[in-house]
Length: 294
Image (cartoon, rainbow, N blue to C red; front, side, top):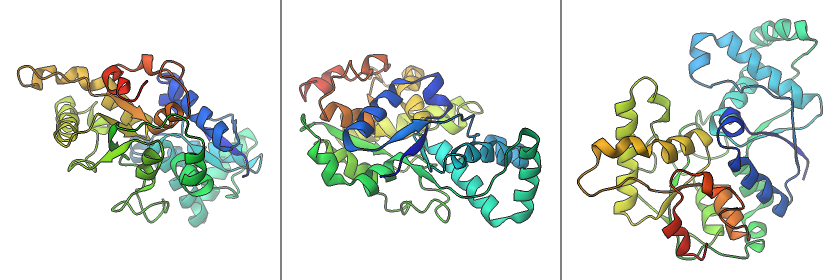
């Protein structure tokens, strides 16, 4: 398998670096070669684009150029980064005028976008390039008995005409990866609901309501925890539960654990919870992990 340039993204590098550690361990175990790149912000696929699309495209293109200089594709650990750079890549490849404008700016720092690489999500790389059977062959401590509710996230497969990894109405890559760990996936009605992170700064009440709805529904269906593949979703679903106290019914506590899919895989491959940084989670899920000997 060809080496990827790993794009962790701002959230992971600045706030939750333990997610990158679990991912790198899993990549090493299954043979995904990756290296760091001289990247900047992706940038944000929603906010900046609708303020100044040209700036958004230039910043995204600069990241693409860094990987192009080594002839390597980018692998993103973040849904938003993946969406932003993949869409920039698509737009520049199909819009000669925008490409010319972007390259005029990049020329000021001695760079030029050619459109010679692709941007991939790590979930697709694990599922399609490594394969579920190889991942299963590395499992030494299956998470048998752990019941997991999935949250793929909004930016993972949309816009689907550009991000063609999965059908957004029939996603199964994350499910297969979680099941490869030995855990059981629990279906619940609110799986496709946004986590609320995208509206938190503008409307905290709505963000909290969305998060509460997901947790309540996952609990009703018997889940022990969430599995996610986006750091922004992780941050919302792990750290922001503290804001749900005022919404909670009497006697109900919100400490529902959220794990990155690579954290579940790393633990199933023999790492302890502490070794991959579960102690840095706000909601560690000690009781839930004890069920599976962790």
